[in-house]
Image (cartoon, rainbow, N blue to C red; front, top):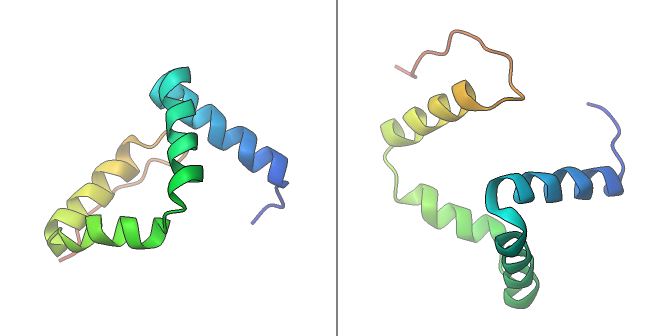
Length: 79
């Protein structure tokens, strides 16, 4: 694990948001996160609890294959 500063993490995060959402939606996302004081873990748990184990595995495999920062490996579903 590399040591990365808070500023570097924020910079990478903002760049990801800008790339995927654009400027206006990035600003909206940040405003929502600040205003709502939501619990990210609970929010994501609701999403994942609605998935079957197979759906979760398929989504994880698809993400790993398409994620540009991951090494490409032979990925096999959990059996």
